Length: 302
Image (cartoon, rainbow, N blue to C red; front, side, top):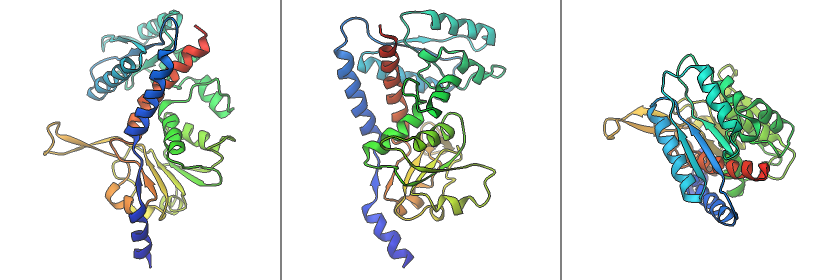
């Protein structure tokens, strides 16, 4: 019987196409920005050092900004920058009336306190949504705050794929400040598309598979390649894979390939819907950053 069930679900499994949904959001923003009479929104991107992933992320953000008509300003301080100097740079951008949004690309060099840096960004320019005030606004369901881009992207993916969380059991695997905690808060909110019943699991959770098997919607954000296996997922669940892990692959020119936190081939046959890696949550993060930048511009009333 179990085989029949999983076979039944494999025939209706739907891939959630993050590239397509992100492209829709980018197109909507492009139309909105085209109607602005005077200056366009401006995003400052601060990248310290040459971490290969950071270089490609910032490039992608720059390209998307150009595509929709957002001005981007890329600032590349030396890797030797001190925390005090980085604070001074952020203070300068906070005070600049031409800058609407500020993003400091992580990871930052050793010796710099990332959380302190995120807190230094003015809450009304914090398009990454990491400032303490903006996280608090998410908890209070205050719409004037900025939601960090990956959790906001997950909610948008679900909404645009016809997944309403109302009354559903949402299980989040991972409790980071960047994904796990905020997405749990968003799924709990008393608003359309949310109203989920949320369980947050992590590395210290006892009998994790027993909990993940209860999920109507499973959000994997633990940062470990192939962590979620087939037997951890309930047939007919919706699975959102937030992981971006590099695993060695000699057949690739780069020497590695990207995989998620979910063993896709094993899990997909059981699912109603699943996001691929790459091409799932990743593109949404950049689209939501642009959405936050336009929101910051509008809230500042310039």
